Image 1 (cartoon, rainbow, N blue to C red):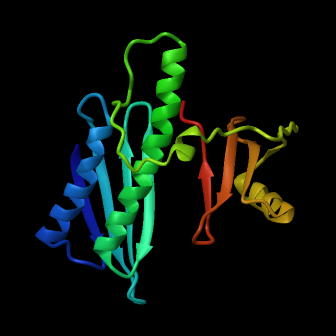
Image 2: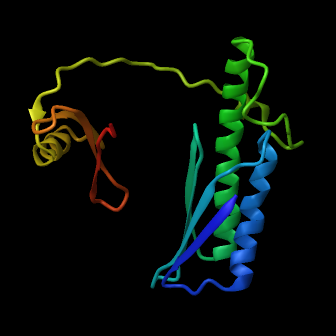
Amino acid sequence: MRYNVRGENIEITPALREYAEKKIGKLERYFEESVDANVNVNLKYYNDQESKIEVTIPMTDLVLRAEENHQDMYAAIDLVVNKLERQIRKHKTKVNRKLREQGAPKFVFSNYQPEDLPQDELDEEEEVVRTKRFNLKPMDSEEAILQMDMLGHSFFVYTDAKTNKTNVVYKRKDGKYGLIEPHV
């Protein structure tokens, strides 16, 4: 893995960089082969004495992403690595199970199993409990945001009036809005 460690309102010391790379590097043990990925680590420090770390690991068939806030930057790094490990373990069991069922000989993730791995976390199945169907009305993102707010939802799916493609607007944690457009 190649690391891109950036800081906002904080100077990235060699010790902090080394700690982040060492901790995040431990995730490689979960993969069959060496991971060819650019790891983006964004460390932020706010005036209210709070640190935030965001880690994004884009790979071919999977994007791992986690963020964590904490008073101590080193503790935030530990917490974000724990989140990423949980994501990997969850994907690992599902992907490996699916590949085994299909008779594929090669697994994406290694068979590494830490001793403290909670079994109920591995057996947890996501299930669709409700399906909705609706017509997508052509509109612009501004109208879609108004519709979303009127419905009290955190996202809204619509057809863009200009491109005639399906888009999604969503409310971000910071209270602002995001737009997801299909890449063709």
